[in-house]
Image 1 (cartoon, rainbow, N blue to C red):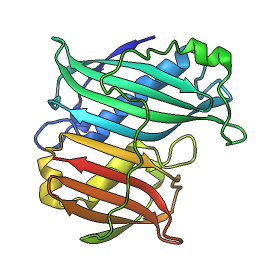
Image 2 (image 1 turned 120 degrees about the horizontal axis):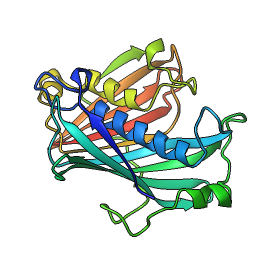
Image 3 (image 1 turned 90 degrees about the vertical axis):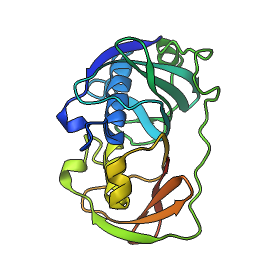
Image 4 (image 1 turned 180 degrees about the vertical axis):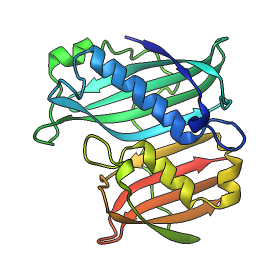
Length: 239
């Protein structure tokens, strides 16, 4: 099953150059994935089960701009026991492919907060499309932390970044990365792709340290706990 929706790029979605921000791309992905889940009976409003995001891989061919109207597709490519893979495609109204994305998920019970196997009924209802892929893969590779860093910044998590799961919403990891990036790189916003690996949830008032590493054509941000140095997330951005 391919789910299709239209989105409008508003003022809050763009940077100073009126190009879509990386966090706004993830907002679109999150919204349409939620629409798909609701259509098959796994809305977080009515269901005891849902999906927890573990990673993204995103390729940007051309950044949408303020005022653009987009056509967005999403579909599942694999559901296996407790895990799933989902792809996204963002197109212009004329049909030009602008952005593609691949994501991995794990199935959880909202009440127990534990991983739960997907029922056969729910798995069938998603009507996965294994042959429809822009990536030719379903599993994201684990990202590795660099051995050294240029600098680090500390941050205390704000309440407005916390979602209905009582965790920092996945989209705000990218906003946090933008805060950590060198100003000139953040303002340019010329990344052609990025990857995110989510490892451990972040909660309200948690204090984290964000370590920045730079190599030729790429920037890496590693978000760690201040208390025990445990990795929360690794974000890699490619120019």
